[in-house]
Image (cartoon, rainbow, N blue to C red; front, side, top):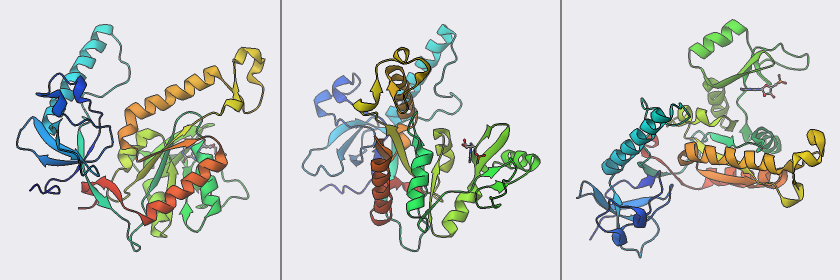
Length: 322
Ligand code: 5GP
């Protein structure tokens, strides 16, 4: 009798198609999976091929999957192949940093449910081109300001008469802001009209200290920084979908790009490309994809997700709960 929970269940960070795997000893015995599936490893006796089932598929026989160690060596080979090809083409391009290779193999996970006395998980929105996640965030918070809040950002721009320090922004001097950047206080920062803006780790903590759920919208690069046991981020990737009624053949048919809210084929192509890029680079860190067609329905869906987040249990990296 196997004890299925003998090994910590891993979550897969890559797709595996045994029928396309030339290295496997037996393609038919392979267990196909998609990135994000949760597996139960039932045997690690072999250093190269583990036996596993997919969690929830109780009737299935166990199948072969590449062991973590083996998949790491495969990733390393693929990485060096990509790098040598880039060298030959003389292109720097984007891609993995060889000094910090993040091999997409498996991550050990565990069920986690937020208890009533625990601080709420951080909700992180990332979006591809056209998703307008800031608007979505503001809308959900405005509906339920006693439960959800933004992290108040810092800025170096002058305070407007109706604004209060610590409410719209923390207003700081350029020197203070630069020092905070150096001290790694921000999860992200940027410039707008020659002023600096940034969101600090402390700003998130102070929302959570009030027992409210903090919602941030960030560039996906900030994800690595936020993936800690303290924040237990739940990452929602918002992808826009443009309904047929808002599509327009080409920019050339309406010089100046007129027609409000209309999207050209070129725009659509750029939006798709942006979504693909984020998915490839950060998809393994995403808990949930939200397809946004219009603001109202996306907002309703987000509200539903946030409610379930407080009531149900979810898979999280095991290091967050130990
Ligand atoms: P305003 O000065 O009108 O309040 O904000 C102007 C712009 O500053 C916003 O539209 C947004 O692009 C940028 N901004 C506001 N808060 C932040 C932040 O926390 N981080 C970054 N990178 N930009 C921000």
